[in-house]
Length: 377
Image (spheres, rainbow, N blue to C red):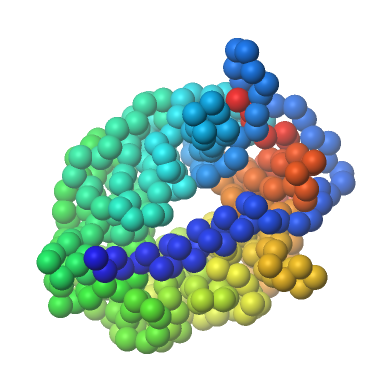
């Protein structure tokens, strides 16, 4: 079965796995780690969580992860109600979970990056999960806008899974419905990227295997109808892109090649993209999190020239539309989440197995940070 998008997901997850297993670096001085609330398990020593996904909403953070247990590997879902300072276990996330997103303190979605991608929903803050009834196999992450959840779902035929449908549901309901089905002659197995902002929805299609010849489809009617705009070769000449919109006209994110990534930013609604000053040798594990039309947070992954199979990471921010970036946290960061304005969480991996990992928190947009010990079970 030809599954579009699998190669890009594999490249990104490979980089993520390398970052978890082979990171180098050291904790910076100046922030004293504080002990978090521990969850005691009767009759055994507590073990730390290895994160698979972190997200935030409405001042809350959630952390999905795994830990060694008697049956091999078990799942845990941790919640912080005080912005990341302390944590409590509220249950287990569906396995595997490496995509986690919440619309508010109650309604959230979990999935993985591996095909077949099955979507799970919660309506009680993550304490209980159920499989979404009609979302289908996902070809994109779930995106939230205006009280609704959107995703691209595969439409599979005898020739394989080579076309898509836009599906949507209210965030508080499991009522997934097809908004638009894309003609198989329009979509031919490309790597898709879904972008949503208000009533405007974009679908970027990059040919499987990379190169030119992709398509950009745009809707101004919540996805009920789409028109095609001329694709920018800069945004469609890679294996795929991970883009977000901060307005109807400003989109930006990362476009991935086999060995490097590039920042992409458009100020005309996706008609043309610019690639500002991020170095061309940024690894595919890099992720850009737009905050506004001019501000963004970059999880920067790059090769350690002294240990060429390692990845080193840090957090950088821009306030001038990507023309320049400055490092705000020089740690081996593997995931980032945002709970509220200026309140960010960064999960950093320790340099050796002897040292502890750390959760770093900022409440002022990255100007100062506090380190905490990660939760244990």
